[in-house]
Image (cartoon, rainbow, N blue to C red):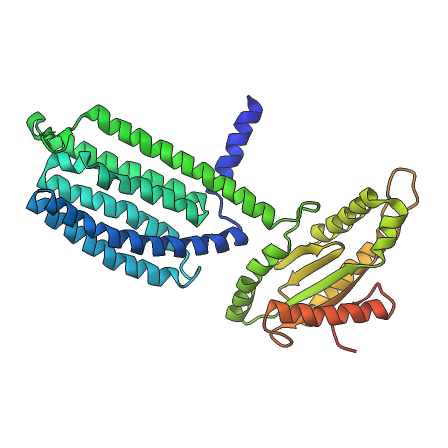
Length: 377
């Protein structure tokens, strides 16, 4: 029971937390996809008033539906234009999803003003809430899903309360929409809550899958996928703030010999020894990622000279702290070589910086290993 409670708390914490950079990048693509879907759905909504008119629907309802469909189409184009600027507007997923819910509520209000039962018993319009909640899954942000679900419940609950407060029993009976009952409205509110929770669980599972794709399984460090998605944001921040950004490409020296001598399991523990040492030494403005094997990237928001000092300090610390494969075994010396490159003086993107750092790493390897180079020699 205690384990189950802790699991639910972990899910709630994950859903209420700000997603990481990989998830935000995926969510930005989802927001653009939602915007495009909104344009398609909005165009389809233009058919509903026409269908209502051809089947003998009331003229007022047809005009209300047509006005709402035109408004939705115009708004859809605005949201699409904003979504094309990926991640420029952090509020966009919240605002656009809230718009979807509020637009549904607005149409229900207009229907209720014309005919009270239509405002609460129009199943087609009410399903707009479910559609708005379901689309939040594409944003990959649990905060958006929970907020929009809560907003839909709150708006529909207020609409229900107002209708029942001002309507007489005779006004809640309709030959077209049936009888509006309090029990039926409560069931719809429960369905909105349940649908929100289901969508939130879907988002949680997607977050875990994306997290696994951006995290190294052995060390728990961010991996190449995370670095590719995260680095453009770091470059943008460095440009905006007018500061330098450096990458250090780090490779453990003669690590194949370690695996051959003490085995791959002990080799994994040696990798963890190195990772723990470097991770514990990280400062603000520094990020460590594993590219694969015994190769790592350290990103530093520092000038080239300061970055070299930091990486060389890590090299000296590792040299001083020997790795003990198992109790009673002789300590093993682990060292690394590294090449450091900087932005904006030496390269303007991640691939250019890694190429420059790799050239210096290879030079460090060929000139004796266990050294850090930040200049071409």
